[in-house]
Length: 161
Image: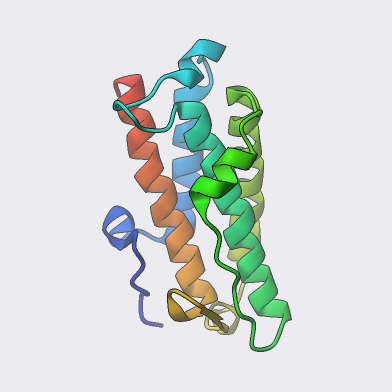
C-alpha cells in the first residue's frame, strides 16, 4: 500500500502512524499530567490557542476523523462532512484543561485500538471529501497521526520541553 500524503505528512515523516499515535498520546499525557489549571491557559505564542484549546481541538479532531473512518467502513460511497475547526472551538469552550486532556486521551486510545484491528483492505476503503477529494481510511489514519505530532510540538514549546 502506498503511503498517503496528507497535510501533516511532514510531521509524521516515515513513522508508523499507529505507533506514532500511541507515542504521541503518551508524551502529551506526560507533559500535561502535572500541570495546574492555570498552566492549561498558557499559549506557546501570542494570538495562538491555549494548551486547553489545543487539547480540546485534538479531542474534537479524534472524534471527527475517527467517525469518518468508521462511517467509510460502514457506508458505501461515503462522503465526509467537512467541519470548520474555528467554529467548532467557539461552540466548545467550557472544558477545563484536565477534561480536555482526558477527552483527547480517551478518544485517541479508542481510535488507536480501532485502527490496529483494521485489515489492509479496510485501510484501503475509499471515501470522498468535498475539499480533499478521493481519500482512504489509511489517509485518515496518517492524517490523525501527523496532526497529533503537529500539536504535540506546540505543547512542548508551551511547556519549555
